[in-house]
Length: 259
Image 1 (cartoon, rainbow, N blue to C red):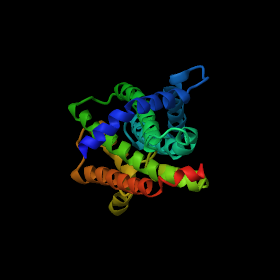
Image 2: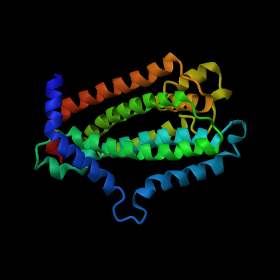
Image 3: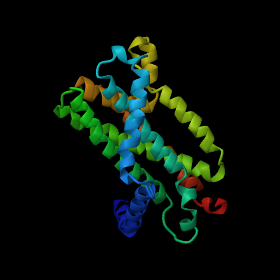
């Protein structure tokens, strides 16, 4: 099996690399700042959110800017990856009808482009960490764990959405409402400490909040999250990947008839 995967990767490596380059460049085509928007846009968004929510929630939360920034970046990574992934098949229908390539490459290239954006914003995030007086420590290496699991989770969600979007265009409108709901249930701008212990545990049912919570525990509290946080992040990623793979395998031969 490993040999088969390696052979397929070598066969389509050039195509995949070109798709990643194209998807990343296309986002900033004909813009003055180009790649700068991948940093400036989220920073402006962060500034507005901080100005608005500091008066409501930020007074009792230490390092409020870093607190919000951590939550906002994880959510935006999820939202961007899955929204771009949802349209990945339809956006490349012209290529799919002419060239025989694995259809999941289009989704993966979108996710890699989003991951690059996320990596660029992490550099800005760490700059804010320094400015806000938060200490750097060796536990920051554990941030690789939620980055890997949220990327896997995004790919799984993208596989489901891209398959549904081929058949039902309404999914894009329903998903925009869903992501807005996820944002408000992910405690990006407020703390869950004021809620009961039972309610706080319910927040962890949301995989996006679990990843945000992981980031905040490492960065703001300097602790390695408990085993159940690791389990939630990993299990949600694996389950979503399996569901996505099921959707892709079941419907991938029918995509071409709806494009």
